[in-house]
Amino acid sequence: MVDRRSGVPAFRQVAADLREKITSGRLAPGDQLPSERDLVEKYGVSRPTVRDAVNMLRSEGLVTSEHGRGVFVRPPTSIRRLARSRLSRDARERDRGAFLADAAAGGFTPSTSVKVSFEEADDRVAGYLAIEAGAEITVRDRVMRADGLVVQLAVSRLPRELTRDTAIEQIDTGSGGTYARLEEAGHRPASFAEHVGARMPTPDEASLLQLAEGVPVVTVTRVACREDGTPLELNDMVLAADRYQLSYEWAAD
Image (cartoon, rainbow, N blue to C red; front, top):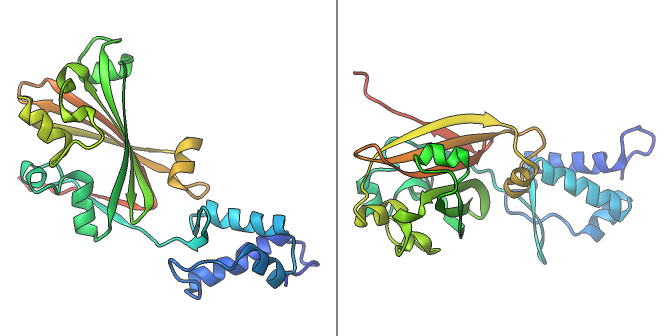
């Protein structure tokens, strides 16, 4: 039961008790929280109070809601993003490139939702891709999940002249992904440049990534180029900062 004389709002007391159960392990990752009715009876509060408490835990990233099933303790996810070999040709040939490489190293199950569209390049995109502003580009918008939890948002943009009549314009690009299809079309990626930053998320990003209040995102802007320096792809990635470790290795010489 909540303490009505404490001066602490009831929903915060309920959230604090549930939070303690989660952090202590009494409610383990994957466990379902008691039903709304059970929580109302347990704490002697109203349904709106219970909902406010659960929403607080959700905003902290401790629980997640599944439509028609209930509220579950969210498993902790820490992903090591390996820069050294994630984009190698060998990794692509083994279908272990990029996010799949992270999954193989981290032991999580990856899944991705993809939307493909076409639009005109704005000034920023045109500058990165060395094309005219207004030129047609192919956009691959992806939501990436680790064990069902959204951990990364990625939007790739490529000149349409490079993707027309290729699987790059399909949801499933096939084994090896976009870079393998570019290589088959005679546009072999020879170099990659990544620019890493950090900022606070937009409301849409915070919602998709289910970020707790105050948690920033890591941004990675990658440009893939052909051997002659021609840009092939601009990829803007947004990563949940509390779920990622970026790892870079290079020789001392």
